[in-house]
Image (cartoon, rainbow, N blue to C red; front, side):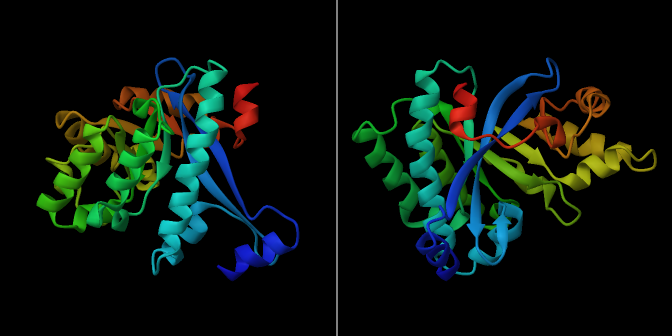
Length: 247
């Protein structure tokens, strides 16, 4: 964590939570938010999750960053709720390894007991598609435990070129964030039928679909026609700080 320490010692905040709007394909209005951890580095500049997540998964750094993100979200969501901002949920990324040994479940139980979390239905947890390669019986148990507390579950990067799409069957996810690959094949006349089949399959197992990489109103309309409930991308606008959402 030397990059973070070095940045902190310089007087710059090394970690910052920013929010991305999740847009309804029906109303084209913001319905929810994704809380994304931004790392500020003196040497590397600003790093977003897609630039550092894979690296941090190699050790316990991913758990420390996820714990910081969750704690920060809990602090900020209270202010957002207090300002009576309308939203269905705010999601935060959690590495799969935090499910094991009930690390996440025990942490959440304690937070609820101490009244740090007062409305669990407003918080969603994002997991990467790596969860599809884990022992299914054990993963279902851990996910059901989290869901029993009222939290929502989201699978991100679903439907990539090498994603085992059928393994989502039986997993208690509320939504999936479809990978950019799905968006690419959706807008190609030769492959759009494949995109439709994947989306239809997800809908058949009663999971909502969020399409990644949408940048224009025209693309929103296409996503809606394909059955996607929400979308994210350039259409979400700039990342916002909590105080900007409250305004």
